[in-house]
Length: 201
Image (cartoon, rainbow, N blue to C red; front, side, top):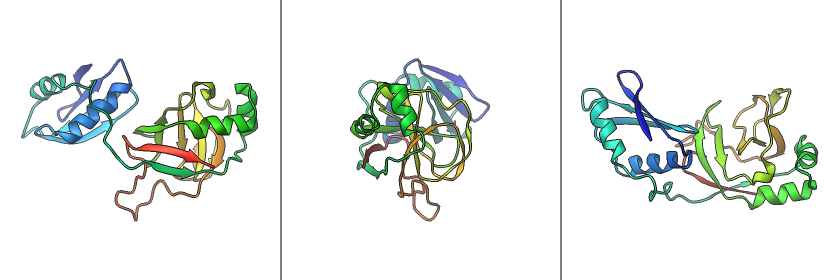
């Protein structure tokens, strides 16, 4: 774990092991450090924004490096169950690439216990870890210009639900009517980092 300056008001914590990102994120949420105003997890980093009137980078870096990420699990939360109609336009292609039937792809996707590792690309777009390694496939060679909101997709080691209609290159295996992003809801993001998710037909 390395803590690097990121401008005058933030530090970037860099990890060799991506599983430690959520551990530190949970630790800093449960027991906040003085002066920290925002935490932004990503695949292998955690951005820590702070108030320079209350702390400074060296003090913050020392406190972060004293934290253990090994014994801290993501915050306890009710599991979000996402109902899916597995009829995505890429399901047959995914099955062929993985060397299994479409039904087996669905079973493997449903059997996963997922955790929202970080959000990016668009508001509410959560990168969910826990995808069966047999389904780790690259993005499509040619992205779509429009992916419908609610599309359930896989790419690399992640699965996700598209929160809005947008361009996208992930492989679409199904769709859900569950709104994962809703500005009228508090909080608007249903799949915030640390949330546990399960998919079901």
